[in-house]
Amino acid sequence: MKIVIAGGTGFLGKALQKYFLEKSNEIFILTRNPKEPKEIYWDAVNIGDWIETLERADVLINLTGKCVDCRYTEENKRAILESRVKSTEVLQKAINLCKNPPEIWLNSSSATIYVHAETQAMDEYEGIIGDDFSMNICKSWEKAFFEDTTVPIRKVALRTSIVLGNGGGAFPKMKMISKLGLGGKQGSGEHMMSWIHERDFCRAVEFIIEHNELTKKVNIATPNPLKNEDFMKSLRKSMKIPFGLNSPVFLLELASLFIRTETELVLKSRNVYPKRLLESGFQFEFPTINQAFADLN
Image 1 (cartoon, rainbow, N blue to C red):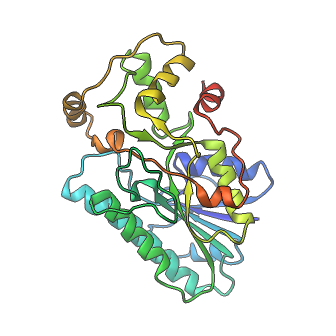
Image 2 (image 1 turned 90 degrees about the vertical axis):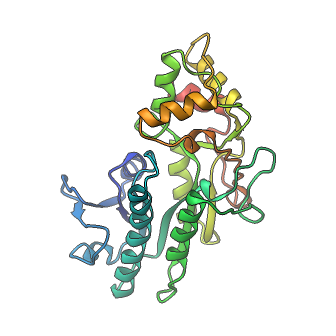
Image 3 (image 1 turned 135 degrees about the horizontal axis):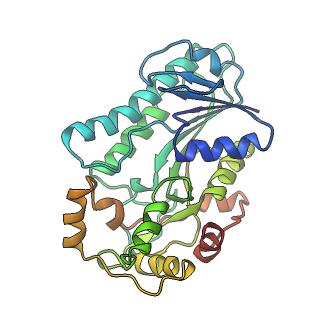
């Protein structure tokens, strides 16, 4: 296949690139800082020469968006929203101009679109979508993705949970704080953590591409979320670290000021269930957290 990944130089983009290259696919990356032969410049806002890359592509994957690991200042909130919505809108404009547009377009979204839930699992059919900054970002993102139906292209929004991998994302930070003896529960430890191993993330993307019945919104997470306290306990055990100091909310709030982030990223309960993937027959290579940690540690 010819696969185009917009915003593909980050952790997930590199994981997908490696996965699909190993299967002899042709990969092109749209990026603001091209360094390799098949990396093409785009600014994620305006139509440019990069549009030629979309011609006769089999798959378009859009991962573009400012990292949410920052303080939610007005400037950062605007950048988080605009980077997601504008990149999606310009890709739609480009597809409308293509003579031979991609057959399927997968666009990033987030499991954060669902409300804080500790007991009720959020699937694609009955999951509750709320009203705060993060959820509204996801709603605006998906609205921009789905509202233009000019070209009959299969679209899938990837409502992705925490992706566990050693190449980036949250997992290396979790390992670092555990090594420092701070790998206890965060806050009450009761909030749920939905997650997926990076290989299963790539396999899920491939599965969606291959299964035409999968359209609209798909949750990308294992069916086995667990409480934060249990998650951290399993991580410490896999790393052979005997103890971990707990982090109460007030301490997390203080720390977040110093490291320029938001406590929501670690305290929101994401209790996501991948009902549509399972209905279509997807099987996880790493369904449990112990299997994932055994592979990653």
